[in-house]
Amino acid sequence: MGSTWVLVADSSHARIFEAESSRGSLKELTDLIHPESRLHAQKLTSDLPGRTFDSNGHGRHDLEERTDVKESEAINFARKINEYLEKSRIKGAFRRLVVAATPSFLGILRKTLNSNTSKMVTQEIDKNLVKLDVKDVRKHLPDRI
Image (tube, rainbow, N blue to C red; front, side, top):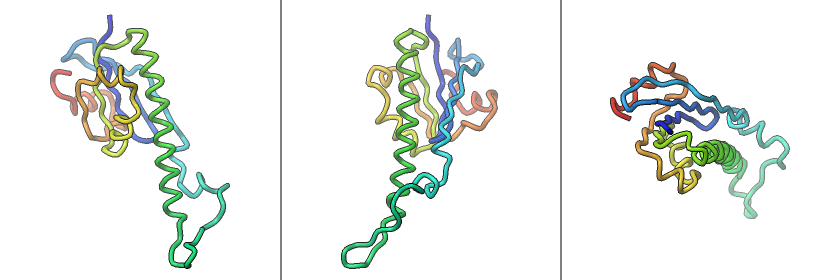
């Protein structure tokens, strides 16, 4: 069988919807949350050593490390999403996939999705729709998905 799935996501929250027809309404199937991505970088790095300095004493590096930790958590979440989608694809749960995500997370998803799942992506939308209700999510999608 299979239908069209719509993934809406940011770095800490993803929702997956199903549309049984190309112009149909959406039904929410699952809600994935990655609380680690919501933590402030300081909390994520609280067990790491303190600030470091260049050998000549000109620069601190804690900001870079914290940014890397936040990005690392986003990548971890993208992998979790990929795993869910890949298992569902293998089961034949969907034939097409529409992806709507924040621009930065959309890039991470592109790099993370399994190549077979990537082939099923028919549309990408670089918007954050994750907090919208189901009817508003549908309004942001093309008439035909």
